[in-house]
Length: 404
Image (cartoon, rainbow, N blue to C red; front, side, top):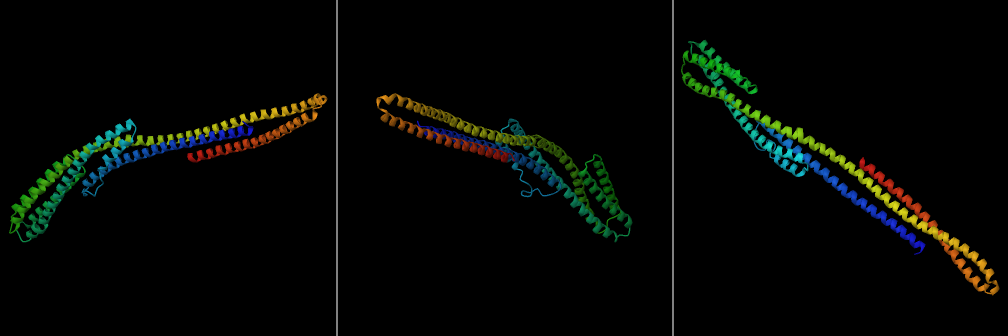
């Protein structure tokens, strides 16, 4: 094989090694980036699922608070609580951690209890609000009778007019007292409140009895009978509000317990764990990026080194050939002189001289060709070094950009 052929072969081999390495690096970086992106997207989806579960639980609590405050709890006016099972299912599909899976399953089981107690509390709130509304309505009716009918009729009756007026005002104050006792019990159910209610109702009934004994005139008899029936309903409503409040408080305690259990699983345990994994995933992504860059640089440098080795091997062989040519030229030159002397006596100098001169001329041409090839090879090696330096700088800039 000629020297120029060897040189071309060496350069092609080095170029092929570099191309293969660059393709391998590009493929490796694509695979690693794809995996890292998939990990990050999966982690973000898991975080969103946990946040969705927490929002659903908070929506459940707000729904109960709205019911307790007397707001409507009709469909469409409150958040959709059915989102929790959907988020929980998605989270269990996404998570690859056995510990997170266990917490997710615990959250699912806990939510069933939470949802059941939530519905019970909503029902208890509704019943209590209905009882309070009934108490308010009957109280307003009795206020109206006291002021619009009883007090108006008293002016027509001369006997016991002042005494009857005092009893009516006393009954009206008792209405306010009972309503306040019940309202206070709703805010703060003190044990003594029921005794206070019984006492207030007793005083109320005494006032009604005294009022009747003073004499009823005209339409007062009918008004009083209706008033007594309304009072019975009012009294039952007042006691019912307190009883319903007791029942509501029991359910509320269970609800608070279920809510605390859900918060402990989701907010105190699962959410921090998923957040920590997200940070870990990001750190892993950065490390993988650095590793990818290191591998890329290593493969690129390896390709360049292999290229240099190939070129150096060919250069060494070329140097040996050139040295041999120089030596051969020198020896032939010496041989020519010696041969000329030796062949002078044989009268063959002209023919041999021409042959040797042609050989020497050919060797000189080959030597000059070798010299040109050596110069071209040196230029190629310098260019290859520049390419290697450019590749290294490009990878360094890319690594810095990805880190930032």
